[in-house]
Image (cartoon, rainbow, N blue to C red; front, side, top):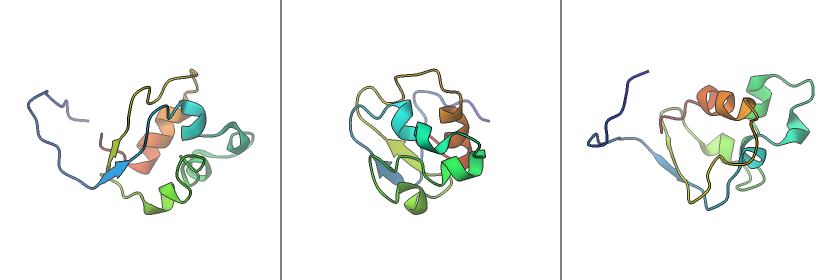
Length: 88
């Protein structure tokens, strides 16, 4: 993974989410029991934007509002973003 500096310009498709998109919305607990990472990633952000994971493309950039990623220490939230290929 390459470090990104504050003066770097990122290029890629942008996928916009709103405010208060917490880790429970990133990977809902209803998809966690007994499911693998790929299955969870296929349903990422479904509660915020139905079909989001299907529209997202690896290398894409998630543009979100305040409080993105807050709420729990659920490690799957980070793994899901990596599985999806989120660049930023």
